[in-house]
Amino acid sequence: MINVPIITTERFTMRPFTIADFKTFAKFYASDRSIYSGGIAGAESSWRMLACEIGHWQLRGYGRWAVEDKETGKLAGNVGLWCPNGWPEPEIGWDIYEGFVGRGYATEAALEARRYAYDKLGWTTVISLIKPQNDSSKKVAQRMGARFEKVFTHERFGETEIWRHMPASDLHQGGMDIYA
Image (cartoon, rainbow, N blue to C red):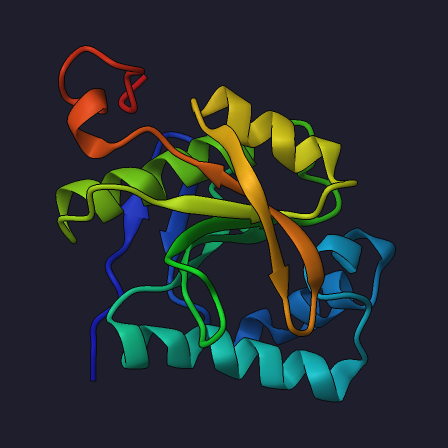
């Protein structure tokens, strides 16, 4: 069994999901906010998605973290590394829950995830898959220094855009500072 690393910042803790997160997780997937994250889902599908989030760590050795707001103790979203079967390559993904949107959590947590991918896992590059209509996620990717690369058609999710993050070598040689 893999131990999911815990990452802390001044504002939040990135930690493994637990069963206690299910209600908030399911509420996100029952809302319109989930439209770019696989679409609106009921409790049964949300349960399977939460199990998938947890299981991804076991199958790949990395995954997405539950992002917990330190001030309130509430689950603010899920952010991290993701590469299920059918993905073109590993990605950084982010979903921020109601009440935490517009506070910079997606960018801040995604930068931490990218730092983990490059510094701990030894990755040299990573992408983010973003639906063409998802302007908010495109802005997060741009703030991180990612650039649109091409369109990818997923068998279930349809057209998505591949946004390529700066290579680890560029970040460590005076490129965009991931530690800002």
